[in-house]
Amino acid sequence: MSKLLTSVGLMSGTSCDGIDASLIESDGENKINLITNHYFPYEKNFKIELIDLKKLINNTLDLKKFKKDIDQLENRITLYHHECIEELKLKIKTKKIDIIGIHGHTIYHSKKEKISLQLLNAKLLKEKIKKNFIYNFRNNDIAAGGEGAPLVPIFHKALRHKLSLDLPAIFVNIGGISNITYIDINENLISFDCGPGNSLLDQYIQTQSGFNKLFDQDGEIACKHKYNEVILETYLNNKFYQLDYPKSLDVNDFDISGVRGLKTGEAVATLSELTVRSIIRAVDDVKNQSKKIILCGGGRKNKYFLNRIENLLKLPAIDINQFNIDGDYIESSAFAYLAIRSFQGKPITFPETTGVSKPLTGGYLF
Image (cartoon, rainbow, N blue to C red; front, side, top):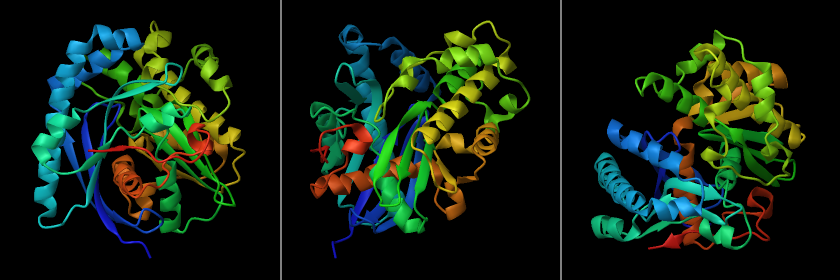
């Protein structure tokens, strides 16, 4: 039996609201103990700066053009990661940490240009925490011809064992981008990005409210309005949906220009329905035979998403919190788990999840 390692995982997601941190124990296989979680919020002004910079980065030329701004934000976000780690250490007190896995904050992701850039100044962080950590989880995969995303499927597979879910099993994560993990009857993985998750919806609401409102709480606005079928179909005609999986997205691959001119309620309902239809198409693509859908990520709390997914699929969509697992921390827990697998030299990406030619380990130990 492999030794259990204690690992911290940190994730700064596309919502740009802060850092999720998780402490787990695992053997890097199917034994997982989820110990505790911690949330470190960004200051409002920093969040706005991060969102605004992200909007400006649409190609590698932009990475060069805005390098000074990127470097400045990278140093600040690294210091936030340090503070988050220190707060978590106080929370867990004497618990020994074997390894730390840090995703960083994705500022640009493009399979076409073979780049996925996460903000994290590794040298600065090492000076602060004086401990080994693993970062740059995506680069090995991209260099070997993969999409570099999604990375969480192998953790979903381990969770399937922990929860003793019947096969086939299906997980849908609704973060900034929604993605799907399908585990078939033989435990083979299929995974890919579905389409926009919360990203367009949140961006629209933040823009309309001047950041006084950050998202559609519980899907309240969407539930009260009807979506625009014509605009929705325009979004669904995006070439992304015609691509075979595995496939991945950057949040800038879609934008909110399509709903400009609509009244607020109709725009929110249309963008919400886009998230739902993207997920439905993905479930149909994997020829789902699971009897239920397990929902993770912040979008699982959106009642519009939940009700529409259940109505269209004729299947129960279950919040993973019903299994006493906090669905807000699946990705941070996943990077703690991936750090252990990386430390052990085990694969974290696979042909069926990223399109890489063979199972491949990833992440740099620093």
